[in-house]
Length: 264
Image 1 (tube, rainbow, N blue to C red):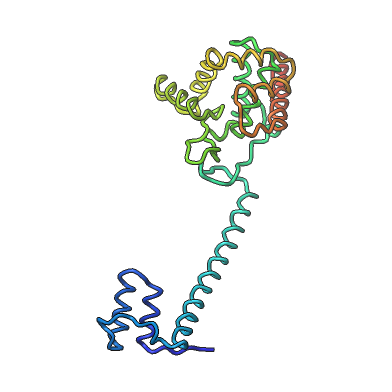
Image 2: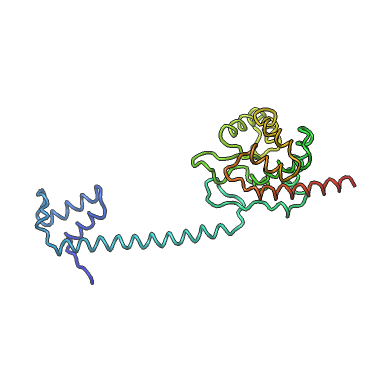
């Protein structure tokens, strides 16, 4: 069924659709063509057919908009789902797409992320008398937090609107502020620098996180050290302990193998 509207009625329909100043102007123009300018609208004189025609036009317009919205929703839902299957190198902090963590088992010991892990183990053993198991459990947690020392900024902050976690331990809130202040004191070191991160770790283990350090020093296995580090030092909302322990064990074995090779 098709509808033919006289110009004055089309102006009224446009007024209803446009709204605002533009709508008011269109309505005024429509009433002027009917000789009604300056008079109040008497809705009782509008026939049922006229009302039905206007309603039909508006409903058709809204149906068209709804169909366009549904189409756009389907399009972008498909796009977002597709992104989840790709290897993402750089993701903004506001992204809803989780980055793939670096698979520690596929890294060579000569690569930078693994060398960072080994250096942390050496420093923890040297400065805090940790065993290799304890240090690997600690470092495995940092590996998990950063996707293999790759993402220094938390991608999906737990608290919306917050800065999120930063650097090796994904420090948040007051701990992040303390870390940023420390970086400034050390000469504006970048957040991904080893020196800045080690300074923060050692500062915490010497002071505010001394209790967590003592608990870690009381563990005997990689699994216990990884669990204790997560529970008492990092305190994440979603521990995902299985993954932390897996990364810690892989780093532990790679560290032993690299040290045996260097001794030979």
